[in-house]
Image (tube, rainbow, N blue to C red; front, side, top):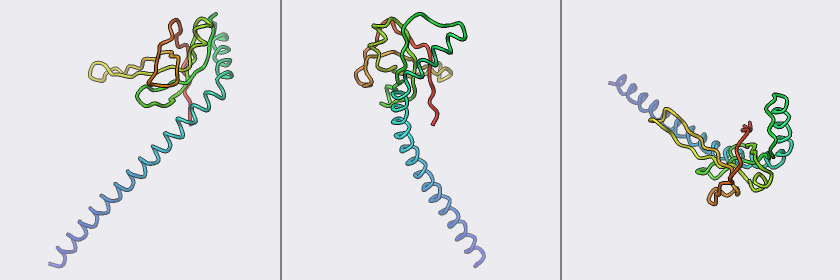
Length: 150
């Protein structure tokens, strides 16, 4: 009887440790993810604002060196996710100078097609960094995507 009791107590103890250990780890992971996400969004916004001219010049040089330079105006702006209200990267936009000057960000809208076989990311040059007030800037396209690694 004592052996059976010890086995039951051991099983309950192991089950309890596994359950509470998993919950504690999950909560700590989520908190870190949230804080990391906030820092990442702020960091991307700062980096894009700080280095937009240098990034734009680098991309233009890269295109020129590969014989795909365009004769339109270009500018680097942040990519904002419409659903998340945060910066998620940067993009170079291209078009006539007056239209490019209007662009403040590129809005990313996402969806899936054919039971999620295809992931769709639409990139739209817009005149605001506010994801609740988006107006497409006509005549401007996206010519490069800049991934920011933290």
